[in-house]
Amino acid sequence: MTSAAPEKQLYRTYPELTDPPAHVPPELVYDVDIFNLPGAKDSPHAAWKKIQEEKPRIFWTPRHGGYWMVTRGEDILTVQNDAVGFSMRAALVPNNPRPFPAPPMEKDPPEHAKWRILISPAFSPKVVQAAEDMVRKFAVDLIEGFKDKGECEFVSEFTSVLPIVVFLTMMDLPLEDRERLLPPASEIARSPDPTKIHHARMALKAYIEDAVSEREKNPRDDLITKILNSKVDGEQIPHDVAVGMLTLLLSGGLDTVKNLMGFCCLSLAQDPELQRRLREDPSIIPNAAEELIRRHGVSLTARLVTRDMDFLGVQLKEGDQIQQFSYLYGLDDATVPNPMKIDFDRPAPIPHATFGNGPHRCPGSILAKKEMLVWLEEWFKRMPEFWVKPGTVPQQNSSMVLVLSELWLSWNPQ
Image (cartoon, rainbow, N blue to C red):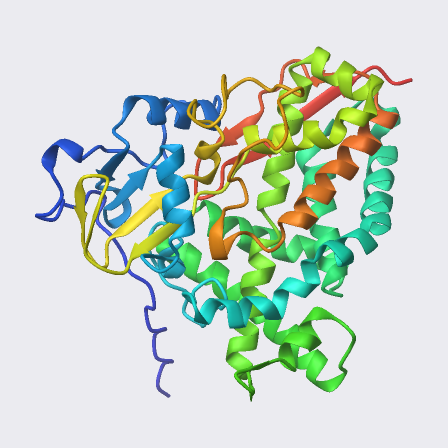
């Protein structure tokens, strides 16, 4: 009997530190590790704000294969808006392309639009508005479930539930699958280990394969069935491409809103005056939600440089990876005054790039904003003043998504 062949390694491994290539000026090399950032366990946003203030507007880090970082607001916008020069085909650090096709993220303009249009209708303002009652019901049920206890662990009891059950409902997937899906989705966004990232991606893909097989036998009026039946340039999209699209969509919908809400809640728990204003004047909630989103963005996608170019006075080479920090646009003093302060009276429109810009702006941003609004409305209708539970420490860190993994809250039950 012969043993099974070992699995082909479909991902790259990198040395701890990579020597800079010849086109990188030595004075622009800084050892900055997104997974091990000083101060991130106290406040990842403050830690990255310090990098923005103290480092050059563009620099090169030798971590995770070596790549460029840009942290100033105007440069972040330039990278986000130029989807041809800066391709999303290298969105993750460390740079390991998915072992399966995943449009529309990995398609560059003009091809990108043909694929994005297949998923955009599922997150249109009309569809999200129609889903509001569902979002509100889930939010109310969760809040009422712990309100009388006088405390909750906000991540496991609220943010790990609301955005995910809403997303699964919209995709017509079983809500109980949440526990199966959260670990691999978190691994993809948070791990620097290429092996773990690969296996997490394949776990989500295997889950979607099962769902696709079921829809092929029993079609429904849902996004999965619509993607399976979609055409691009008049041709039915291949099975593996449909699976890849849905896997990408699933992984994108499971982790970011969870952490965004968590950081917003932490800031509110630390500021009774902000709570009082939301409780006493609900009319400010839409502007307050936008300000909280600006202050607490969580994602930082990277890009692939597609041609040799001069950028910000340095030479970028085709194949270089470059990382832009979406949330740092809204934390730049050149974007908004006193950006670390939460100001519910900040004039609208409040500038931020939390959901990206250009062709690759997050297609789920309208849904994310709706969830934020509903959470704030229902929370402050029902909850008294709350604070971080004494004796506990919020668990925060930096990775490809800024993470708030534990937040204990206390209040006096009414």
